[in-house]
Length: 351
Image 1 (tube, helix red, strand yellow):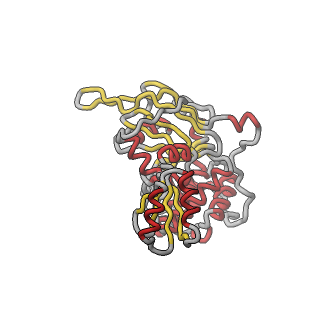
Image 2: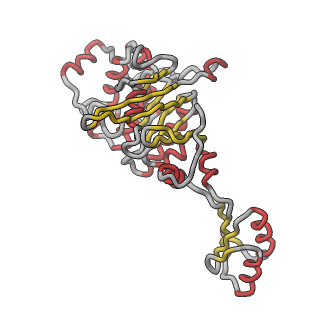
Image 3: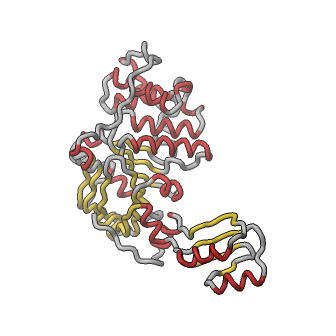
């Protein structure tokens, strides 16, 4: 984590702290209320390309990447190491200039207009988001003032965020003494201090225990309902599956698929059903079920390929007690591996 310097601490000399513990007005979410705002894209990326010099030869890291995010939407931006994901994120965040293409955040190009950074909040992987020897309230105040907020707005937003993220009791505890889950919640709070419209989240639940991870996911779901747009990058594909509306997969610098999360999972899921019964089947019962096209995987587990056969099977099983019925279902990890390994063709949706 970064360590604060004297120069950093001087930012606080002009801050009026007499009411730092006073309850403030509610932190307002981004204003997406009019019809024009509802249809507006918070993030637009068109034709991004970037090459680097590698051993004297140009290496294309990102090739013609296009994507967009609307208010209240979570897009999972997925890719293996070296796929071009990090370079793309850095270009979106204004840290790396593209060779071709453009980025707009709430209508502002981060490579041309500083206003874009006022609409962007970023949480990086690891502990690079906070000053370790600052307290939570100091981190929020410091980064809020760097974003150009006035003193009163910084105070109000900081207190409201600490309350919302259940960190008020730790407001004067140095970050280095907080739990990993608290640090991550604070990092998200800092990204929200200036009320941006877009959040870039890199591995927001990595290294957290189960409870802390669930708390982060709940907070992110609340933010989405309030209208924030989120670009999520993670190798924890179960988190991406749970939180995202759409999945964008980048491979060798190019986007190879972009689809709604539910649809892409259904596309790779089978049509079969597994039925588990309470007792072992007898040989005569097995013959009857196999005649219907069922596959007996054990004396208690029965698999049937299609829906019509499933209902016929249920009729034949009466009155045997059924413990569980499961539909054959893929998960995002299986989908990602099949796509990136080229085991199944998926058409890229046009942006």
